[in-house]
Image 1 (cartoon, rainbow, N blue to C red):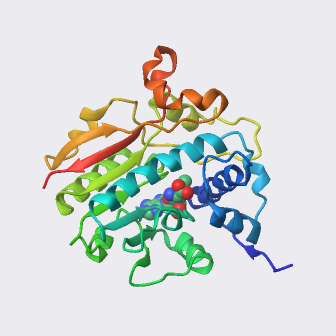
Image 2: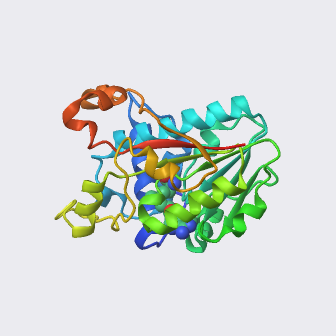
Amino acid sequence: MAEKTRVELEGVPETLLWNLYNRAVEARRADALLRDPLAVELVDGIDYPFERFGEQMSQWHALRVLCFDREVRRFLRARPGGTVVGLGEGLETQFWRVDDGRVRWLTVDLPETVEVRRRLLPDDPPRRRTLAGSALDFAWMDEVDAAEGVLISTQGLLMYLRPAEVESLIAACAERFRGGTLLLDAVPHGLAERSRRGDLAKGAAYQAPPWHWSLDPGEHEKIKAFSPHIAGVRDLRLPRGRGALAIAPWAHLIPLIRKLRMPIVEVRFAG
Ligand SMILES: C[S@@+](CC[C@H](N)C(=O)[O-])C[C@H]1O[C@@H](n2cnc3c(N)ncnc32)[C@H](O)[C@@H]1O
């Protein structure tokens, strides 16, 4: 059997393994909603105690991923040869799920994460490149080829940043990438407060780092206020899941759970 790759990450970078595991758990199912053979291959090849994450969140995670994939595919149909920037991409395998043979892909992540990503998912320039650095150091913007349009994806990143950092990042993107789009997901305020109090996953084998930035569903004005270059903000719906998550696309219509949803939002920048 091939030797497994040892991955040692802590704090926020370690959360990328949680997301990777969730995708692999879902993709292994006979009735999988998400096809992600590369995520399965990565989990099988990494030496890490993945079981500590549990499997409770895997279907929900897969629905979030499917929602982001749908928007990336929509962008690529509208802007063939456009650039997708994955901020805080971790070991996301989205490129391999959505590649249309023309997309240009830039991953930006912290140096310790990029060291792991480059080992496991080596770059393939000019179409697929990885940059080591914080998304908050806007030097990455100089590396973006914006000629055919830009989509910035921040899946699973912004909740780990401070509110002022999120605001300055989105404002800088809106200023720099006119006519572009940014996708984000967030945790609602109540859940973020519980995470900061250490009330979530009590007694579980894995405790995620606290969530600092939060957003309730429908708080579009808050995002619009970040920059005059924001032309529109739209909630994206999860696709339909199994069992209790069969209602996921319509959760916004159900009073008791409407406010508990984790919003996924498209932010459009003015041209
Ligand atoms: C929850 S993981 C999400 C990974 C991936 N987007 C996914 O959904 O599978 C959070 C990621 O954010 C990265 N990260 C944290 N702070 C960052 C920063 N300031 N700039 C860029 N990436 C950051 C971590 O290294 C990690 O890869």
